Amino acid sequence: MKRNLVIIVVTAVLFGLAFGIYELILPLWLKRNGISYKQMGWIYAVSNVMMMLVPIVAGWLADHFGRKRFFSASVAACAAACLATPMTASVVAQTGLRLLQRAATGVYQALQEVLIFETNAIQFIVSIRLARGFEYTCHAVAALLVFFLVIGKTSTESLALPMYLAVTMLVIAFVLVVRWLREPREQQTRRLDVKRINPFGLPKVLILLAGFNFLFNAGLSISHSQLQLLFFEDKFDLANSQVAIVAIVHRISLGLPMMLAAFWMTRPRKWLFALTVALEGVFVSATVLPTTVVGAVAVWFLHDPIGAAIWVPMNAWYMQQFARPDHRAADVATVLAMGTLGMAIGPILGGYLAEWPGHVPAPLSGAIDLPFFVSGVIVFFSAALVCFLPRARHVSEAA
Image 1 (cartoon, helix red, strand yellow):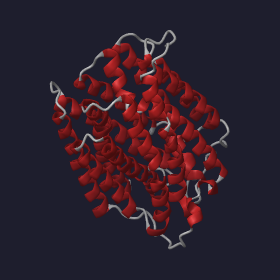
Image 2 (image 1 turned 90 degrees about the vertical axis):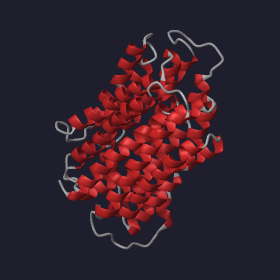
Image 3 (image 1 turned 180 degrees about the horizontal axis):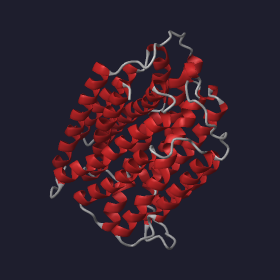
C-alpha cells in the first residue's frame, strides 16, 4: 500500500473517532440545554442547505491548486467546530457551528474519495471500503469512549469532555496530513472557470446520481439526524450510557461489514446497488415495529450490513468513474453537495413528525415512530433511480 493510502486510512481512523463523538454528543447536548426537536431539526437542516456551496467551491479550487491544502483545511475546520460546540447553547450559534462542521465534512469526504482514486484507481473499490470501513468502525469505538466518559453522569458539563477529546484527535490528523500526505499526481494549472460550479454542467450519469443521493439523503436524514438516537432514548426511556451502546451497535453494523466486503466484493454491480438500497429502507421502517429495545435495536442493526455497507462504495465508484478527469474534485464535490441538499429536508420533517399531534395509525405506537417509518419508505423508493444508471462495466479504473 502506498504511503498516501496509509496516511488517508490513519486520518480516516482519527476522523472517524472524532466524528463519532460529535454526532453522538451533539443531540444530547442540545436536548440537555432545552432545545426542542423542532429547533434541532432547523439547526440540522439550515446548516445542511447553507453548506452546499462550500464543497463545490473547494473542489473547484482543488482542481486548480491541489487536493492537500483543502483536505487538511477541512480537518482543521472540523476541529474548530468541535472545540466551540460545548461552549454555547444558543440556537443561532449552534446552527453556525453545525454549518462549519457539515461544510468541512463535505469537503473532507469529497477529497478523500478523489485522493484514493488518484493514488490507486485500479484498487479503488477495495481501498474506499477499507478507508470508510475503518472510519465507520471508529464511530463505534468513539461511542464506546463516550459510554465510559458519561456513564452515571447527567450534567451537561459531562458531555463537554468527549468533545474536547474529539478536538485532540482532529489536531493529530491535521498534523499527519500536513506533514506526510503528498499530492497523488502533479496538478496542472488550469484556468479557473466559474461554469465548473454549475451543477447542470455535470455529465448525465452524475446528474442522475445526484438525484438519487438527494432523494436518499432526504429520506434517510429524517431518521438519521437529531432523532437517530433520541428515538431510542424517548421510546424506551434509555440513559445516556445506554444510548451510547445503541450508537456502538449502529456503527459496528456499518464499519465491519464494509471492511469485510473489501475482500470478496471488488466489482460494482448495479442490480446489487439498487437491491441493497431498497433493503436498507425496509429495515429502517421496520425498526418501529418491535415493542422492546432489544428487538428494535436488532432490526436497526440490519439496515447497514445489508444496505449501506454494500452500496456506498458502489456509489463512490460511479462518481469517480464518470467524473471528468480534469474536473474530478469539482464533479465529485458537486454530486455530494447536491445529495446533501436532501438533508435540509429530512431533519425538519423528522422534527415535525416526532411531535405530530394527530392520529398515528397502527401498528405504530406513537408520533416518535413516524420519522423512522417515513424515512424507510422514502429510502426504499430512491432505489428506483439506481435502476436507470448504466451498467457498471468491469474496466481498468485508471483516471
